[in-house]
Length: 383
Image 1 (tube, rainbow, N blue to C red):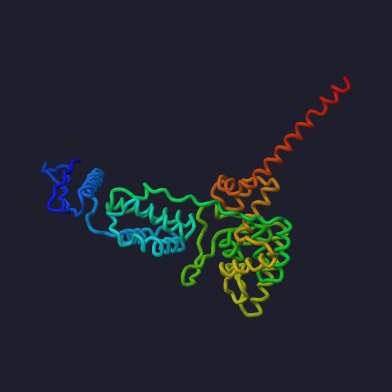
Image 2 (cartoon, one colour):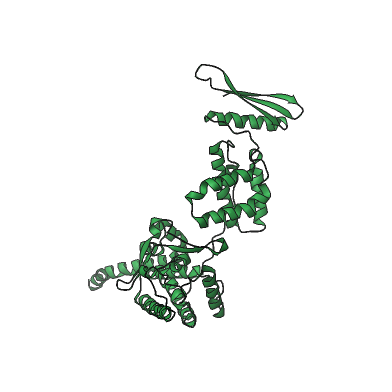
C-alpha cells in the first residue's frame, strides 16, 4: 500500500493512501487533512497505511481517549460482573480520565501512558497501577479493532511489577486464641468457618442454609456475596469451575455450624421469621446479611485486641492452607479446598511453606534408606 503527503500550508498537510481498485478496476484513494509538523504527518500517514492493509481505515474523527474508553465500557459491560465493571469505571474515572481523558485518541503516545503510571506510583501501589494498565491495554485493543487507532500504545509501555503481598499465617496456638476471644462476639461461627475451611470472605458470607450438609459433613460453595456502590447487595457464582466446589467439614466445624444454625433458627422464631433453606447462614436475627466491611472491621478489632498485628481477614484463608500443607496434606487437596483454578496457583501462592516441607521430605527419605540398610550393616558386623 503506497501513500504520500503534500504540504498545503504551514502546519497543514494532505495525506493520500492508495487503496485497492474496486470491482470495476477504478482507482481508489483515502484522503485526510492533517494539522502538525512534518514528522507528525509522516507518522499519521504510516498509521493510515498500516490500517488499510487490514481492510479498514482508521477513523479520522477527533474521538478522545475518554470517549473511546467509555464506549469500551458500554460494549464490555454485558460480558462482565457488575462488581468488576464497577472497578473498571472507578479506576478510569479517578485515574485515567483526569490525566488523559481529553487527549485525542489518535494523539495518545506510549510516553503519555508511561507518564500516567509514573505519576500514579507517587500516590497508589504498583498493584493498582498494574490493574489500570490491564484495563487500558484491553480497552485500547478494542479501539484498534474498531479502527480508531492502528496500534495500541500500551504495547510499548512496561507497567510496574508489584511486590508480592505479605501473608501472615497464624500458628495453631494463635488460632486457638483468636477463636476463644471470638466466642464473646456474634462472629464466632463465621470466623471458625473461615479458619477451618479456607473460604473467601464473599464465599462464607454467601453460604445458604441448604449449602450446609451436616449429615455428610460438607458445605457447597456456589455463590459469593458482594456489596456494590450505593449499598446494593449482589450474589455471583464463582469465576471458575474449580471455584464451585464441595468442601469437607472437620468434626469441630460441623458442631460449630450445627449450634450456630440452631441458635439462628431460635432467634428467628422469636421474631416470627422462619429460617428458610435459601436463607444465609451468616445473617442477623432479623434476616439482614452480615456485610463484608462490617465483618472485616470485627476481625480487625479482634486480632488487634490480642496484639496480633498485620493479620487480615483474608489471612484466615492463608492460615488454613499453610497449616494443611505443613501437615503434609497433598497440595492437590489444598487446591480443591481453596478453589484455585490450577494447582500451580496453590504452589506459587504458598511457596513460603515449601522449604519446611522439603526439609521434612529429606529427613523422611534419609530415614527410609537408613532403615533399609540396617540388615546389611548387621551382616557385615557378624562377618
